[in-house]
Length: 245
Image (cartoon, rainbow, N blue to C red; front, side):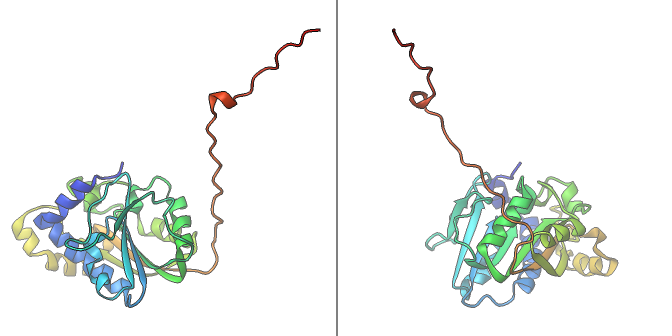
């Protein structure tokens, strides 16, 4: 079940949410790279990580799933957010250079179809940045943050999903080593947790961030959707009337 937009907004307003945003943003912006004159889409609830892109990108659109809900973004400016079905994005083929997916993959019922759709809307060589809760991480075991909802991923699961749909994983980052607790002394030591966690390995990380490059040819053809017909009563087949001799 998808987490509600109000819960996401409220989390990022808490001290723990602000720290999580900072730590994840560091990794996301390292992996995004230069977006000058490029078209960027944020999928899921990616707005906390898109602000820096707005300064240089040609355009930035925040696409929020209908089951999650939508907010006006950015503040004090014309809206750049739109409510969508993540499996049927309202974009033409090869229209996007960068996709940043946060609080998205873990809430989609059909990740295979999502990958086909992401391949369709991205241009060859496009960058896909994905942030997911780590399957065995502490954050995935607690439901007091958005990273504790939905389906978490291991690194191998996410890597295989990307590669099987012609997105080649290029760079990985592990983040959120601090425990998911709104405890002030703990939050003040967040950077120490991140540094120490990297020395000990990824076992303690709460989330995984990956950058993958879109290949020129799809590994799996897009599924053909069946046409939907609505049978009208007046158009239903009727038996022929008996003829009189």
